[in-house]
Image (cartoon, rainbow, N blue to C red; front, side, top):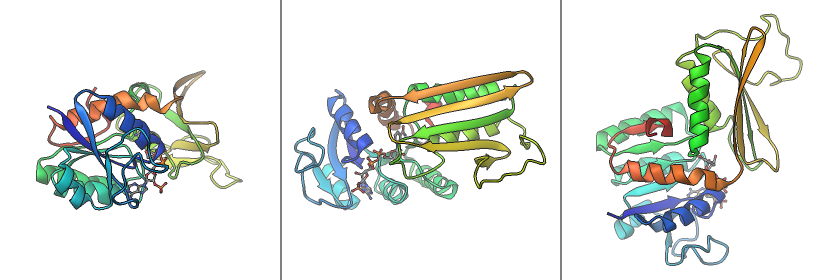
Length: 265
Ligand code: NAP
């Protein structure tokens, strides 16, 4: 069976790479692009993604659903667009596969509820890279023994949200095994706002944004006289594509909300 995939954000950096990967996958078809502009254009027109001729752009998800009958909506947009896109997709019988970061905890809960109510899968993947998912798993495993943790995530300077979805997810996974406690000196004095980073139950997250970077994360775990560093680097957006294809494929056989690719590998 060919999986009919619509992409929201197909003009973007991740979306255009995913459009190519979906087009090349033998069991998938890129059937439509969901956008907030360029209604009725074809995706290879003008400055849009030139790889996928014949794929129409829709600004209405209801029209996209009716005309193209997608099985899956792959969302690679921005923090403002992702929730309404996924919410509408679920009510229209389309399975969201979400790579976009920036969903709030309340929004995630609402999508989980909608996914369960409709008996449709909804896959949220803060990081589609298999290496990054392993990095998160290994960090959570290590934090069981080394509970003083700082996360440094580093991304390109066009990224809209901080901390990254991967860092937030890593902190969440570590929180499940780490007893909440303050780190650093109890009387530490912060002289420049934010110098100690964001705080998750005493664990720190630092977000670096610089041109030249793509997506990188280092988890530092300190113990008496030792330091364990677990690092992952994505140098190319192609690193995310095996995970994108896996999530799209799995979304057809799952019927629940899945938070993180680690639940699938
Ligand atoms: P990007 O290049 O800015 O692409 C986002 C695209 O979405 C842009 O073309 C943007 O159009 C479009 N867009 C904005 N609002 C939209 C809407 N309502 N409907 C449809 N399209 C809309 O960003 P990117 O680097 O590709 O990243 C996209 C998202 O993926 C970000 O949230 C990023 O953090 C995330 N990401 C996830 C992973 C992962 O593994 N899960 C990896 C990398 C990135 P305009 O430019 O015209 O506004």
